Length: 252
Image (cartoon, rainbow, N blue to C red; front, top):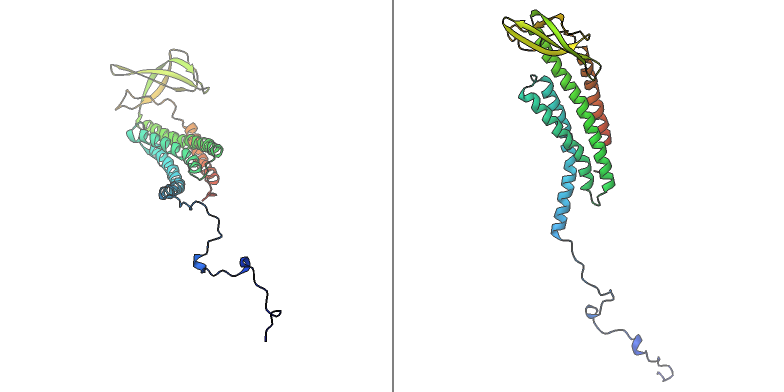
């Protein structure tokens, strides 16, 4: 038998368990604006930028190869031919593209760094100029040596020429004008000389009998061209190695 004193005290209403189903209880999460999903266009633009950034490295290496191809075309093409000029133009354009690839890669990254891009542009331009100097030195010297060799082989007729107008050039060498006659025709050319001859001095030169109007062969010594070929041939791979190390894929 339970007495009034044994009955439990009543539970206050604020502590009584709720009878509302859990599905209908209000959420305790803070109320705010709904989350906005990133726009599809922004994601697509980011993916295109990343693809373009990654494509700059292989394109840059293709440009390096194009510089070498242009130099080789100039070196082995006939002197003054269309291929000879096209090789110079193609090598210069490829070198300019290679110099712009590194700063473009940095600017295409998320959060572009203008300072780093300017430094990369300076380094790329400097290396591109050095590559053009060495590769151009090799190509020009080799092409000139081939041209002079062919002219030397064709110059089988020895004639006497009169020297006039000797002058010193900027590279401490001497250039003179040689005049000679074949039959009833007079010809002249300006070539290098070992000495600064006085006007009227007579020397023996060789000319091409089939083309007497072409420049005469005075000395036929080409050791300076061989030095230029060696300098260009050794300097070109050195510049490419430095470029490869500076453009190492550290951000891919």
